[in-house]
Length: 133
Image (tube, rainbow, N blue to C red; front, side, top):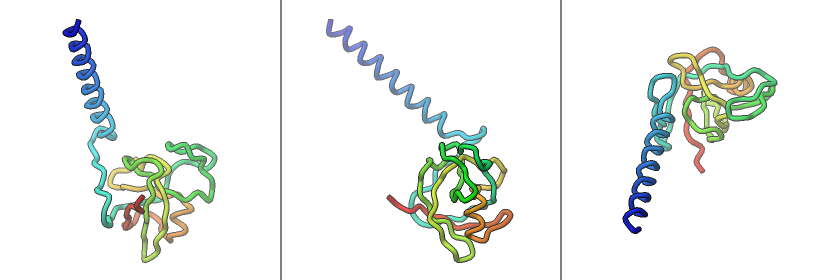
C-alpha cells in the first residue's frame, strides 16, 4: 500500500514539473522569438512609437481604450506594471495596459494621449524605469 502511494506522489510530482516547464516555455516566447524581462532596477532606453488598440475597444489587459487613456503596450511586461517614461526631459508615471508593439525594432507603443502629453511623435528613443512596488 505504501509503495502505491509513493508511486502516485512521484507521478504527480513529475506531472507538476512537466507543467511548470511547459508553462515557462510558452510564456517565454513571443512571436517565434524569445524575449527576456529586463531587470527591475535602473533606467533603460527603448524605441517607442504611437499606436495600440482603437478607441472604444478593450486592450489585451482588459482596459477600455478611451481618447484620453494614458498607458503603454509592451509584449512581455505584465499588465498593470507601473513605469516611468521620460522623453525630452518630461517624465510621466504610467502603466502597461496592452500587448505589442508588433512592429520590429520597437519595444513600446504609447497611447496617443500619453504620446501627446510627452510631446512624442513618430518613433523616438525614450527612457523608462520601473516605478517600484
